[in-house]
Image (cartoon, rainbow, N blue to C red; front, top):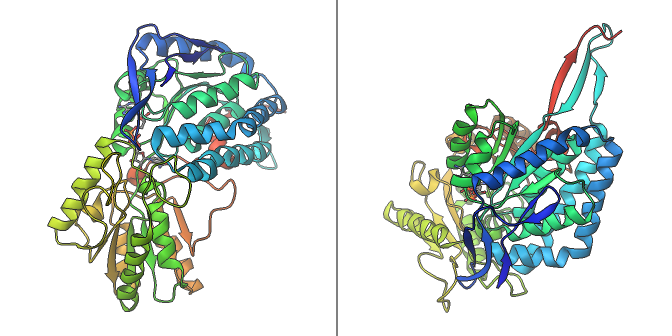
Length: 476
Ligand code: NAD
């Protein structure tokens, strides 16, 4: 059993002020795999005080110096990537190959992109060609970073690295479900020699450390990724101190598949949906298919879902792992039940554990066909390997259904018709539109609209979230 009760505050690992043990459960076997502590207000205050004390000196460092510390973090990661993959896999159930690949790899990817993007920031620039007004970009101050469990290193890197590069100091509260990877990240920061107080980590839950950070008068900004529910709660708590709040929240992505889509489009959509056991905010969870291609698409989706294996996270090979915990498992089962009751046609997977499994939070890769707009599984984020398929007759109808959701994170278009793709890309209400399976370029902003939150992470946009613009006149 791993014992990691300490927090990383002011450059050292310190005991919690009040003992409050919390088990981390391995979702592959439902057994506790680690003990951490949940922090108290006093622990949070100590971390914020350390970050506040470190801020003036850190903000005054040169960009080159901050970059060299971040490069040091990358070097530590390169030495210990295996450990990082194992921590992620153990705490949240990502299959080990996914954990080593995209999950841990996201740290390197984002970090390298930020090292490029930081050179594009104009710290002091004249406004327009005439006049003597200058615009200075300055770090906002102490920032609180609150992250979820589903892509733990992805989200931690998307917050800690730009905050540090911008010249901010920070307090990270990772998810209490998946704290091990973040504690390893803290070791990377320490071993990279980052000055004391620049980065601090306090474990805890939303009601405790999360709320204290969100309402703390010395925290200038909260950057949050997680559920829409928690995003609202944080915004309310933060309102009193008028801090900046940036939110990356849930999604209910629509994937519009036209009859002229490439042959691999449906399979790609199903696999994307099931990856990480469906626990991705940008999952293409609603597949809308043009009527002439609909029956064939349902056939393909059924057979692809039936070939997706489910297995423990530490097992090598191509499969999905469990979902993160019992609460998520129960919630997903409820959604599958609702889908059946409301009359959607179950064509793959369904209720209960996959055949031959009796322990672990495993969900059968599930596909519903003939889902209708307004059904619960069409409206709500399931956060599990459950795909909803529905036919459409016209492009206008597809856009209407795609946009008729409280969310707006990523929508997808599969079509060989470029004019149509261009039209749709502008009509879909979302922070991101991915077409024909093409990934966004390095440093492209990640974020949503409406109930998906309104932050932008990654690249230049992701760094500017942590900066304030100051307008200075009379410069000349
Ligand atoms: P969650 O909202 O329950 O928890 C996320 C984090 O917020 C955790 O660290 C938790 O302790 C903390 N928290 C919870 N309540 C809080 C409160 N009242 N005040 C302060 N902190 C609080 O979410 P989760 O279950 O860990 O993650 C799943 C959700 O995250 C999904 O809805 C998913 O779509 C969303 N998500 C969004 C993105 C994105 O970039 N848009 C990325 C990943 C996950």
